[in-house]
Image (cartoon, rainbow over all chains, first blue to last red):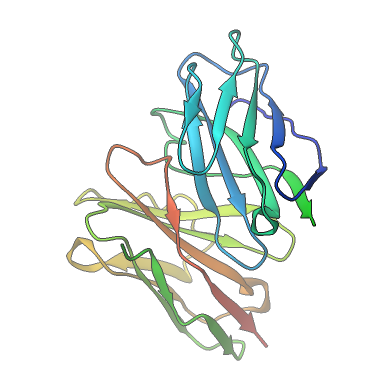
Length: 113
Length: 114
């Protein structure tokens, strides 16, 4: 699986957009970009994923660059409950690692009032 | 709808005792996963069930760990002769057959071995 790089921490004001970057310059053509988050003392939570097109759901938007070497997760109106560790991972659609999630260090997002 | 549930939420046991952890996946999800997460550590894959196929046990750390899934739904993770290094949060997740990277996690069971 391609390595991903994320800033260790970010701050965001409540009500503002939180833009979380992720670098995945070695991503291969069959790997999707997935985002999960983990709020303190809770299990991880799936957010969104994409291959090459931008994606949006009720939680967030995912913007993937045309060369697919980086992406940005956007929480349009961050709330205090969005404070969590956010993980960006590149996962293949098949193969031996299929379905076996591993998280790196992620980005600690702190939303403040 | 109902999410993944796990029980118990907390378990304290003495070294050497056996423990059973239970997971109820989302209804209709054919894939079920067990992970563990130690304090400040990342996610460690343990075992993966997909439908009626033989489970992928490649992540089980020792033969003291086993898991079963009855009737394609509820799963039980059993740890025999627990050791202090088994202390961790044990997480269960489920997914559809075609969305195995889109996993929905339960709240976890915090296991403490004294």
